[in-house]
Amino acid sequence: MPLPEKRIIISGGGTGGHIFPAIAIADALKNLEPGINILFTGAKGRMEMEKVPAAGYPIEALWISGLQRKLTWKNLLFPVKVIHSSIKARSIIKKFRPDAVVGVGGYASGPTVKAAAALGIPTILQEQNSYPGITNKMLARKAKKICVAYSGMEKYFPASKLVLTGNPVRAEIVHANAKKEEALEFFGLDRNKPTILAVGGSLGAFTINQSIHQGLKEIADSGIQLIWQTGKYYADQASAAVLPFENSGIRQYTFIARMDLAYAAADLVISRAGAIAISELCVTGKPGILVPSPNVAEDHQTKNAMALVSADAAIMVKDSECARELVKTTIELAGNNERKMQLSANILTMGKSKAAAEIAEIILSCIIK
Image (cartoon, rainbow, N blue to C red; front, side):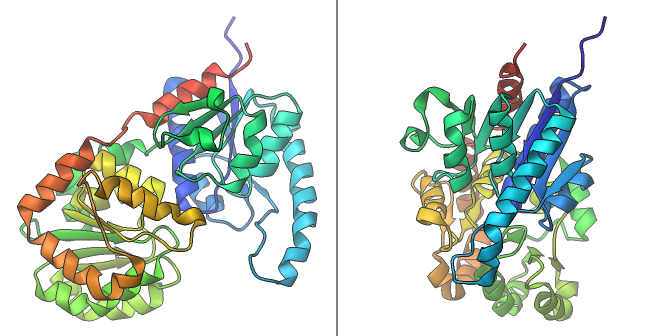
């Protein structure tokens, strides 16, 4: 008699830094157990409602958001949203009957993981950053296992529950470097010119975007090609700005669906220093210029970046110095093959390409037999 299929809920999102690790975990679970049934929960109106179905998984929306830091009438709705999303999360769990629930951080993981724990369902957390989000800190007490990417996390979580796995990276990005020729053709680029990938995260990064915008002519005049993901907030300005330079190999995108090909084409990457961006640089071995966001808890992106800088595995440009230094540093590094090879060799040693598979195995091991 065949065993009943396992059922897993993965919850969280809000940004690509939460969503793409969640999808990588789902893919790894499918790889281990092809018959597994996976359901996502996410926050209504956030990008997971688009990206998760695009990856082939069903998702249920919860009406939830975070508290605004400034005084606003929207905060009056917060308690109502918490109650509403908690009731809906409990209903989803009772209907789907998961064997385990995984929280990856972000607003939606709070009510879902909390409801699962209250119903006696094993819960597993995945924390991407060196400084954990408030949701995961609140949920840690009831979790069976907490998968982390940095050592020293016992400052925030019970040591007995911690497993150092690294951050999950999508399989297509782990194997990106084998697709160089396909990538250059996809973006319409010249294989004889250096190519830069500039990405400020899925929603964009204003400082990086503005600095590149101001330096477009300098980049084009240096014979450098550019794949530029601007995010939606800077897309209109950027699309107009690149028009005079399209014949020079300057390509602008609001969002790049084929990030595997973007990494494959790139000789150098400009990025924020979010945990997932760093994990992707490590597994692809790309030399990187990191511009940590100053608008994050405990300045954890600077800590992320410095872990690489101290190992001579990346270069950091401060956000406050970006307008003056970013394009100049980029052009210098793009033309220095020896330095790029040195950074690439060092960053490759820091990659954990099997993190998603390890996390999937931990999730399956937590299921009550």
